[in-house]
Amino acid sequence: MRFVFKRSYNDDIKLFKHRTQMFWYLALLIFVVALPWLIDDFLIGEATNVLIWAIAGMGLMVLAGHTGQASLGHAAFMAIGCYANVIMLQRGVPFIIAFPLSGVIAGIAGTIIALPVLRLHGIYLAIATLAISILTDDIIVITAPWTGGVGGLAAPPFDIFGVDINRYGTPILFYFLTLVVTLLVLWAYRNILRSPLGRSFVAVRDSEISAQALGVNITKTKAISFGISCAIVGLAGALLGLFAGAFNNETFNLVLSIQLLLMIVIGGLGSIHGAFFGALVIGFLPQAIAITRDGISETFGLGTIIIPGIESGVFALILIGFILFEPRGIYGRWIKIRTYFELFPFYRKGMFKRQKTYLKTERMK
Image 1 (tube, rainbow, N blue to C red):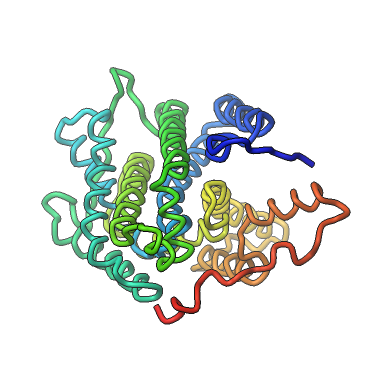
Image 2 (cartoon, helix red, strand yellow):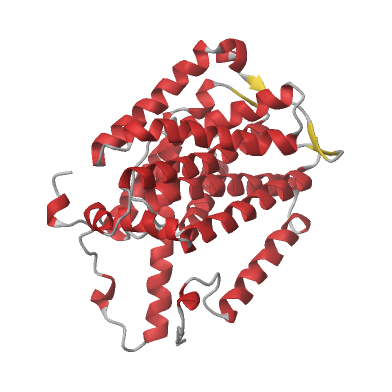
């Protein structure tokens, strides 16, 4: 069992709690850097897809996990980032400028929408963001001269400082591009949580009344959180467009918004780790379903089995299972297992008993 003695305020906001933790994260970094030389091109593509989902998960985690604001409309901001990036690339803007600018555009759009929407609470906020996701589909079709409408757009080839990068032609380079973006977003996210702004997010999540009593501007904090969240999700959308190669209005539908929310709930709300655990589930589950289906078909000689909606059904079952048996998600279960071995034989079953996350004065919001 490890004890960490904090002697100053700086000890409480360090990037790593202790050197052992830093060692394991460095080992993980070395592994993901060496991964392309350990697997084939197909699995490199799957690993890239997981990283893109992780970026989107971190974006939504800022809002839902650390500020406590539910959103069912983040697919709309993925679409904004994706279309903005590709349209600028088609008009000759260098990728090194177009890509970050697409995230900024998505963040500005999110901030503008957040000012009226985030005055709502609970189910009303979820319905408002749901409406945004539905309207985005129609807006993409209406603005067909720019977005291609139902026909969609195709991502053009691009390069960074003269080095051509393509998902199919140079999968390793595309993987490293996505990995660098993931690490930069992770570094920025971690530093936001260490800052006064990040603590304001958590204060608003835990109790808006208490946060307001401490001098936190609730509306401003929510708007900033929504803007940062949408900017990160916009970057994920830009990478998703380049990864897919071609996309249209159906790529960023309501199902994508629901998958994003499922991802962070399954991974573990309120934790950066949860975004990555959820991305692993969302990224590899369709492949696991396909492999299992093909295995059953070959074993019993049933031919090709196609069950419409099987992925959505499996996602729903997994979500129900986590809500019933492990509301803290995969990362929460890992914390419990680790704590059990650290405190054995003094571990108590009620140590992680769920607590009410609202005050009596906030029940009607």
